[in-house]
Image 1 (cartoon, rainbow, N blue to C red):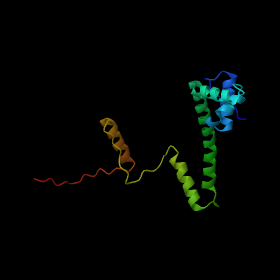
Image 2 (spheres, rainbow, N blue to C red):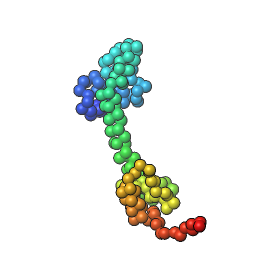
Image 3 (cartoon, rainbow, N blue to C red):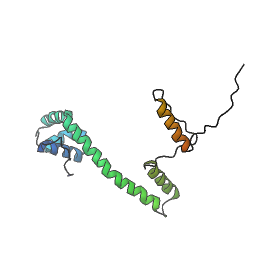
Image 4 (cartoon, helix red, strand yellow):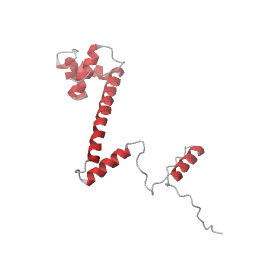
Length: 155
């Protein structure tokens, strides 16, 4: 059994038990069984009804979403360590090391390296100041060439 969800929205022990059982069982498909384990019902029909009510309650939904997000946050650290191990392992295939290095960089604060052929996304509803700032940053990063070109105008 996993640790109970750490959600201030849940104060009732049976709600906490329901969310914990639901996550342990694998998600909403097992809500009726989670309702049984939390003590909301014994019969299948009653458990289905209790599960539907519980899943429709915003506090329960928020607690489930929070617990799932927390699980992904914890798993992200393990995933990063795995990518780092592959990247640093001289016995790993070169393509695996390169891919791991790229994934680490793409998710870092450095972010993915823009292609030189990338275009600057200018939304019509963006203010002029914001557009100028984007252009300045793109120029500083070497992604924008503003060399003037001569254009022939028909007379």
